[in-house]
Length: 280
Image (cartoon, rainbow, N blue to C red; front, side, top):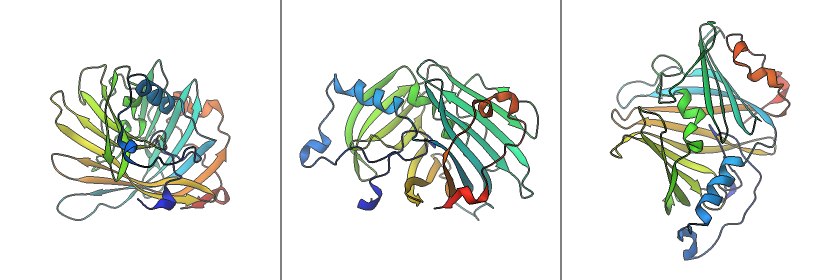
């Protein structure tokens, strides 16, 4: 990973935004030293309570890349990220070629709960009770609300496993158990040792077999803010991949609480003005 990208910190889905540089890279063999039983819960708690410097809206495209055959036409979307009620909040809209919202979801999570609502084709939002992998954001895609909501980061049962090299970086790996029945039974996710960024997450069945993998692929800069620029989600059975790329970012927004009311989810949201978006 290029040194110039190491100021990026991604605390959530999708998270999915950058925090200011807050630590220096440790040197020597202690980069891979195991966390002590006292240190591990502190690292996880810091990750869970880290918050965005300001509300953000991202313009994204999602492209399906099958192992064989042609890539799909990119699906455009808007992703809003905020903080409230003690945790992160996300609202997403997928749009068709005419700009109409075909799929929207709203997700909230904190130390006590994880909630998800989905609205399709203008119908009223429906609460999703089982926070599993779920249905894709658009026909032909792999990416689901689970991949952007990442409820597993706040699942109550999360165990520190090891400190190893992950995508070229020293990282702490945790294994979170799904409190509900269904897939995935568990998720193995890695946090960068120096910056607390989530580098990857692998959804597994109860026997530890990988079902799908999420990984940060690329970074970019909007104005003076580093952001993730691309993440991939791979289905381990088919080896097909979805690539989510951020094209523009509107930073330092102030989003009203009512924006994250599920009763408004079936209504297209007003995005920031064009001059507020910065290209990556």
